[in-house]
Image (cartoon, rainbow over all chains, first blue to last red; front, side):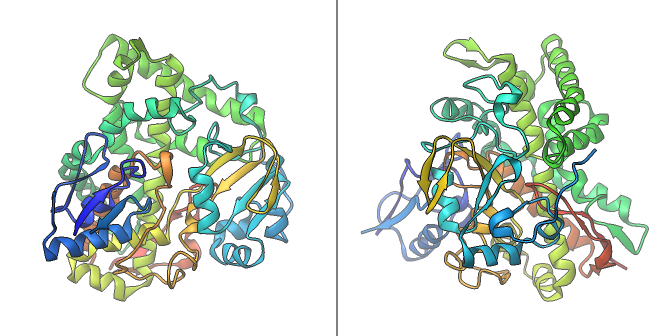
Length: 64
Length: 402
């Protein structure tokens, strides 16, 4: 499992990097970026799912 | 002079967000509208619609094809009467539409990104402590007027590079723009004159004495090799000032109002400081201070109603946040709500540019207040007053701390 941010949907709401700072960071404009490339460990996966459930723009997705 | 207005008897067909009932407690009104309409209408303000659901608010917020942001404060006039410079709008980027919007927004976003805002934390904390020191003598403190109100202007003033002694001037300006919506148009325009004078003076001063602040940045910024139009610089400064002060003041005030009446939530915040990350988002959901506005671009059927060109849309993000279709137990404040896709900062391309600063100020203001006063209650519920207009928060909030 890995996590992606849809750059077309992300508006910089800032929820992902606040909930899961080990998984997400931010760019110069304040939009979310994925720090943890590749397969997520168990703890990171849980946080990524929580970030997905909190993104108002539905831009965060945990994918197979 | 404020126009004499008829009290609202039916919010579904004749709503007014400045009606005393709405100002006092809008939440039952919105719940009724969700069940009855769900898009309310009024002939006031020249015709306006109010979608009370998360779905309706969300659809309109993301739809820049059918709705324009030319003006975002609903009032008796229309933008043409203010002769807004196109394509900039009166306060870019909040009043800009695509494609210009993205250009104007990208210009200011770096100044409000977490990378730029997070380093301000020690300074915000020091300010909160100084304000609390000043309150320290009495058993009853004015938590809105003498605390929450004074936090955002100090930070914004410094970002723009305006003189320290002007904090009170700022607050007057914000009041004029956001709360005087029921003034007749000529009075509203007249009320803006001192604001224009003040900003012009600040811009001139920065032209002569450039320094490391947002005003100088805007004066030097370029789009396609051209310096920004003076209206653009002016409008963005107005936006930063207006959007950055009343809003966060309101969020801090509402959160303290809640804690003063909910001792178990207060106790948890005191004993579980890590709870703040999720608690902050629940404060923002439950007490979202900001309602925006749009104008309908052309006649159309939308959300099941017949909208006309230049009708207002009152875009109630606070109402969307209380929609049970989007949030389980929407009308319950759940301090550790784990899943919370609230829309307090809006949705889509106009997401509040200052959200990182707002969160920082709200979090630090609450942390410092509960650290100083681990137990507090409302001194007198009857003395609490609420703002009128599109920014909702307590303006007088006497809190018993002793």
